[in-house]
Image (cartoon, rainbow, N blue to C red):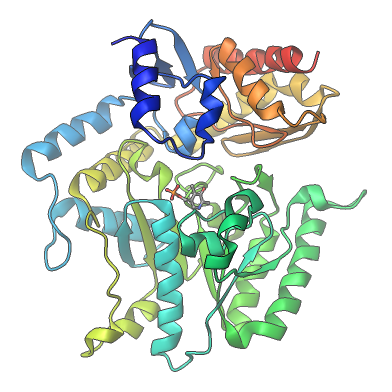
Length: 438
Ligand SMILES: *Cc1c(COP(=O)(O)O)cnc(C)c1O
């Protein structure tokens, strides 16, 4: 196998995600033979730094020896068993550990295999909770402008990305929207906290008028990743939590992208000191090895389904719900968090990257340079509609995997990124900017 023949076979047989396939007439696919640590390698031995953690899933590098050893051990014991009517050690241990990480406030774990399914589960559970509680009129959902919660029809209904949503609009029961607390919306002289307070006022107005028919408010805590790494002050989450509680509306925290240490705390909600009614996790949960997602919820929600009537139960399922291998990968991921004191180690990695990126942040072409935990982003002043594509290709020339969202360039590196790789990332980004915007 070589690069070229893999490309040809892929284009003939594989329909790639989030892609206009015709684009590959001019922009080649990137063939990958192997991965190791933060690096990907093609068939000719060319290495690329995976500076976006393969769509934000990879925390501890590719082919991580500890996760791989756990998977090998699990493979010898149990690959998979249906979770309806059956149970196994990895799913029980993982549920206990995740619940402990919420201080046992969210003590019930419901599993699926991808993020969008976790979102659908949280939405269905919230609605069904109200239905079982004698409030069947609570059928509406609320989300933020610029929200992204996945692309199945239910998740798309709470997603605010026109390009992904508009063509399917006739199929969707689109959610209500309130303004994002994105700190870039702050007026001159206002702080990020001021922007959060302004958005919270709009949320309160909406809930005051519509709480009776609203089941849940779904948010991406601290960073709205997919629509360009919009970052916001934790005060918004505190207000949203209090308002939802006051108006009897569930709060769903979609931590699919921001959980597992990405924002600097294990869960992003910790920085606001709040606990949602539903917590959705996926992406980093298995360290980037296997698909897995989970929704955690409270005793109160669980109790509303617990009954002699089958129909009052939550009858949702997926074939691979609670897959033993994926749960074992997640357990190995949690073990690494403990063994390597990852949250603290990330603090010094982030400080190092910020120091190295100071000149980039001050570059006149760079606007709103921002950082939350292990996420960095900046907006580039350019009218070039092809900027994202051109920057991606220029970065690849410098051995860097970066995929801007519109005019926003972001870094979401695996936590194992080292000093030399930070140097390459920042220097390569500056050179790629020079290439694209001379
Ligand atoms: C990626 C993502 C999803 C969807 O997860 P998939 O596994 O791609 O379905 C949902 N919410 C957020 C915040 C995400 O970043």
